[in-house]
Every structure is written in C-alpha cells, then in structure tokens.
Image (cartoon, rainbow, N blue to C red; front, side, top):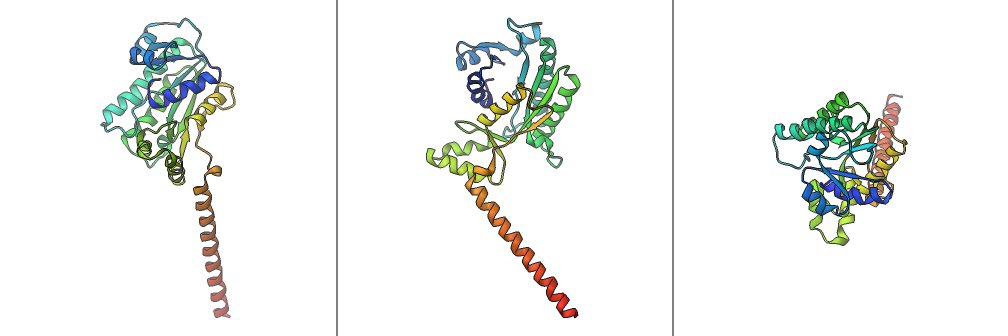
Length: 239
C-alpha cells in the first residue's frame, strides 16, 4: 500500500466505504503514511492464520515497475516470486477474491521486455497457486494527483499545462486515472466484473483524440476517393 498507486487508491477506497488492512514491507512507513489505520507487514501475514478482522479480498499492488533499471532476476523476484508469496497469504487468510493489479504490457505478445515477461509469468503463477477467485485488473500507465513512472516527466510542467499534456500523450498511449481504477475495484467487489478486466481512461472527452480521429477519418475518406477514382479511370480506359 505504500507505493504510488497504493497511496493514491487508499483514500478513494476508504471514501467508498471499504474497510482496509494495509500491508507492506515497512511497518514504520505504513504508519507514517496512514496514521490510525490497520497496517501489517507481509512477514506477519505469513506467520498468522487469521487477522483480528475477517478479510474478504486481497488487492495485490506490489510490483517492480517498468521504469526501474533492473535485470531479469530482480523483476522475477518482485513480480513472480513475491506474487506467489502473496497468493499463499491469501490462501491462509481464506479470502474470497484476489485482485491482481497487472499491466497491459503483459498481454502484448510482441513485448519481450523483462518487465512484461515477469508480469505475465506472475499472472500464471498466481493462478496456479491461488485457491480463491482471481481477477486480473490490467492497467496502462497510471496517474493520480501527481505522476510517476514514465509519466513522471509531467510533474516538471506548470500545473495549468499538465492536464493538456496528459491528454495529448493519451491520444497515442492509453493511460488511466487512479479514480477510474478505484471505481473498477469497486465494480469487482460488487460482483460486476470477473475474470480479466482491462481499464483505460475514456477518450470521448479528450479534445486531442477527437481531432486526431477526425483527421484520420478524412484521410481514409480521401484515400478511398482516390482509389475509387483510379479504379473508375482504369475501367474507362479499358472500355
């Protein structure tokens, strides 16, 4: 819960009315970030058969991100081996649901990066070891009140320019806000979504995307007109 996405999601999930047990590697950091909340270290969860309260769902956020400069062994340790540890914790707690927050890159066959391969293997290993219902929540680049990962460059822009820059970038690469992620998690918990769930921001409200779409439509219309005219011209020559 202490990573970028976790810090952004926790207040939103609490606002939705969910009761949270926040897990991480550093108990002091968790207490600092979330004072007054129930926090626990992963090691303690592995030693306990139960918590003081009943846990229905595990939301697995821990990951080595794709902007990290690490070798394949590091990605495997964080995105595969640790994911299996969390799956076993979920089994010990006898939860009903396991929401694995994973990456859009893991679903791209052509993506052979260490990050994408480790996330894909992590999904497979979780499915093999888990005894509860699994939902893979597949995300592109995530942003919240600030930006992290490959979007972190937007933090250097003036506040008034960040939203426009994000919309321009999202015309060509999908992104998703933590607000939409929180809504998706709520849908899963309410039984609306199962299995695999891919979520991105809607492009209907993106002015750059609308312009891009209109330009593309005109280009394709022009190409169609040129090709049609060319075919007609050839037919007339044959006659």
